[in-house]
Each structure stands twice: as structure tokens, then as C-alpha cells.
Length: 283
Image (cartoon, rainbow, N blue to C red; front, top):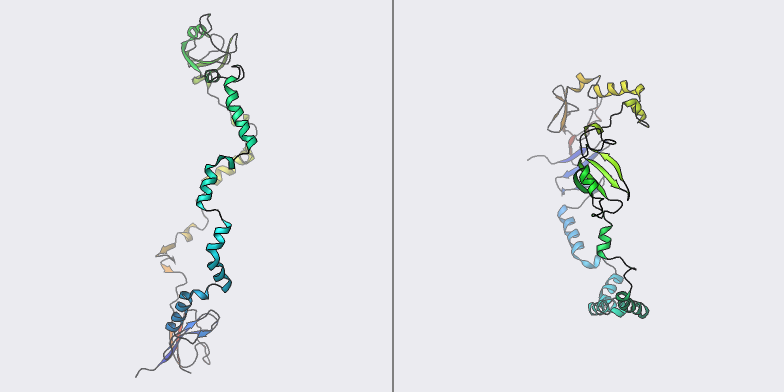
């Protein structure tokens, strides 16, 4: 007949019993305390606690739950009451407010036309930029037969006849100020803005001339390490760290089958490691 032994595991401080051949599977707490109760018994107790609702609320809670329907009716508005409130306009504004609204409704149509702007008048305030072919077409917009408002902007596709403002090909934008055309800008290759680094004001201090060489060196060495040869020997195998083909810190756990507690032998005690198992005799 096989010998019955206790199964213990070394947690770094003490041997923790995880199995007893006579009591079955045990539950060991973090502090080493062993619950001398079988798991099945504990599961039954927990299940009873969960399904027994009286264990989860006090008698006061039960009283509140039983009175909830009556309390709710006296405290909260019903759907019918809310619907009446929403459809009854008297509940949303006072009588004085209603009188003001009634007066305003009858008063607005009788206001003189100069008080409010019409939709057409308001739309005239939004001056959409116009597009014409050349300078002559632009000037025709201000002839006696054409009405153009001050503030109107016009894009001239070919403004080469403007000998004062135009130096390069490309469309130009003008603004009518009521008496003259005002040149705003021109789109063309000659309008590119190019500045040397020294001409930029308030540029980042880290990019000043004195730091440009250091910045260039930092970019060049961004992936260079002094110990690159050593780092290249580190690999990941199935989520475990290896160095030069060998797993780092790979120590297999051992199982001791002996009466004497491992680590207490004399004259040379065994060096036990976390996770080692001891099949100990039953005390």
C-alpha cells in the first residue's frame, strides 16, 4: 500500500500545506492559515448564503421595499400627471408672460418696414466674391449701369493690365471701397515667401545655431547603443527572456520525498527555492 504524505509548497518563508490525504483538498489562506473544511462543504455554505435573500438586506431594507409602492405614489408624479403638465401651457408660463406673447404676435405685423430688415436685405449683406475675366471686366462693374456695393471683392483671372500691382501671372483679388478698386493679393509663383533660418524671429531655442550640431548628432545616433552587441543576444521565446540561447533565471522546481524538512538537514542543509514541493510525513 502506498504511503500517505502531506503535500507542501515552499513560499519563500514557510512550507504551506496544499493537500492532506485524509481531509481532502484544503484551502490555505495567504497568511498560511489552513481551513480544515472540505471545498464541497464551503461551496454549499456559500451557495446557501447567496440564495438566501434575507442575508443581504436588513429588516429596515425589507420594510422600505414593502412600502415602496405606496411611498412612490405619494412622492412621485404619475405618467398621467406628467402628460397633463406637458400639454397644459399654463403650467409653463405665467399669465403676464402669455399676455406679452399675445401682444407681440398682434404687434409685429403693424411695425414699420424700417424697424426690421427683410430676408432680401439681409442676404445683400453677405457679399460673395465675384470672378471676372480681366481688368476691363472688373472696371465694368462700376459703370453707371451696374450697382456694386462697397466691400465687394472680385477675383480677376487675368490682371496683367494692372501695371501698378501685378508683377507675375496669376489671378488677383480686388476690393471695391466705394470709389476705387483696392488691390488685396495675387496668386502666382512669384508670391512664394522664402526666409532664411537667421531671419525667423522667436524661433525655438533648441534649434539655435549652437544646438544644431548636437541635434543632428542625436538624430544620427537615435538607434545606436554602446552595448548593442550584448543587447543583440537577448531574445524572447514564448514570452520568456533568453540570453545567448539560454533562458534567464530558469530554475526548475524540485520535489522532496523525505521525512526531514528540506533546508534543515545537517550538516549541509538544502537550499530550497520558491515553488519547491515537499511530500512530508503525516504528523
